[in-house]
Length: 408
Image (cartoon, rainbow, N blue to C red; front, side, top):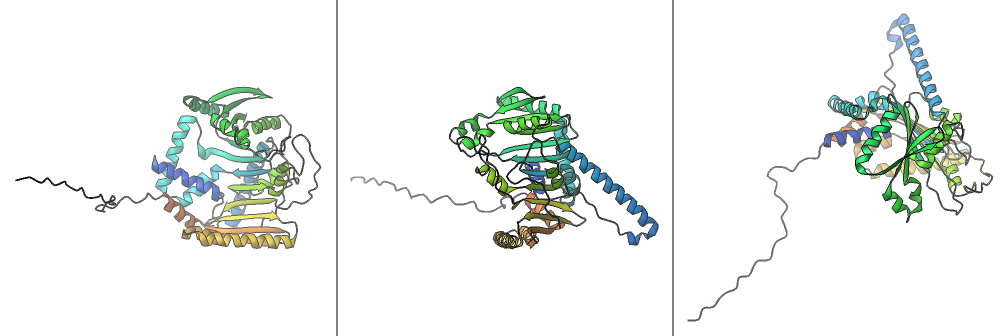
C-alpha cells in the first residue's frame, strides 16, 4: 500500500450526439480510471532461457518508464507553488485504458474526432504527455476578505504551444471578447477579460480573480491557462522565483504507472485561507506542526482491473480509526442510495481502513464492469414506440349552443 510522503509544509506552499456522448464517456474515464500496465507473462511457462530474456525486457521497460517519469518531474519543476496538484496522463488513458472499456467502433469514432481536432488546431489529444491542474490557496486580503484559490491547467505534448495559442485567439475573434497582450518578465501573456464575470464580481467579489484569464507558452510544447495572477506566478517560477518543491512533484509522480494521481494538504490550506497564517499584507508565524489531512491518491491498471489506492495522514492511530469509520460509513450510505448496479459494485469494491497513523483506501474495479457502465451511458435514449397514444390534452368544456325560438 502506498504511504503518504509528500513534503508539503503545513500551511505553506507545495504542492453531433454520438460524438458528444463519446467525449463525455472519455471525460468520465479520465476522472475515474488509471494507467498503462499490460498483462504480464508467466515466466515459469516459458522455460529458463525465455524467462531470462523476459526479465531483461521488463527491466529495460522499467528503466524507460522511470526515465520518462523523471523527465516529467524536470518539466514540472519550473511551475509555481501549489497546495494541491492533479496529474493526468491523456496518452495512457486514451491509448491504453479507453480501448479496454469501449468497443472498436466507438474507439474508431474517437480517433476520427481527434484527427479532425488535429487538422483544425494542430493538437492530437492522444499525444498530450500530461495535464496538470494546480491549485494555490491564498491568504485573506488586507480587508480580511476571503480570496478565491488560484487555478491553472498546464498541458505538454507533441504540439506547438505558439501555434495552439494562435488557434485559440482566432477562435475567440468571432466572439468579440476583450483579448490583449501583456509583456511580463520573459514572456508575453495573452489575457482574456470576461465581462460577464466582471459584472458578477461587483456583487460577488470572490469571482473577481477569474474575470481575467491568461494564456502563456511556458516553452515550445507546454502551455498554461489560468487566472491571470497565477499565470504571472508561472512566469516568475520559470525565471526562478517561487517554484514548486521537488519533493511535492516526486510524491505526485511516485507511481510511473498512474494515469491519474493527486496530492494536497486540505487542512493546511484551510489554515492559510482563513488567516491562521496571517494575511496577504501581514504574515503570521505558523503554529501548525501537524500534517493531518495531507494525502496521496492514484488510479492504476493491470490486465483485468482498475485499481484505486491512496493514503491520508491522520496524525495518530486513534484519529486514523475515527476518520476511517466516518468515511466508511459515508461510502456505505452513498452506495445504498445509488440505483445503478454497476456504480454500486464500484463503490462496494472500495475499502477504507486505518493503518497505524494513516487512513488508507484501495479497491479493484473490474474493467468489464466499468466497460458495461460506459456503454450503458452511451446508449441512445429509446424513441417513442410506434402506435403509442399521445398524451391527451386537458378536456375542453363543451360549447353550449344558443337556441332560437321562432314565434308562430
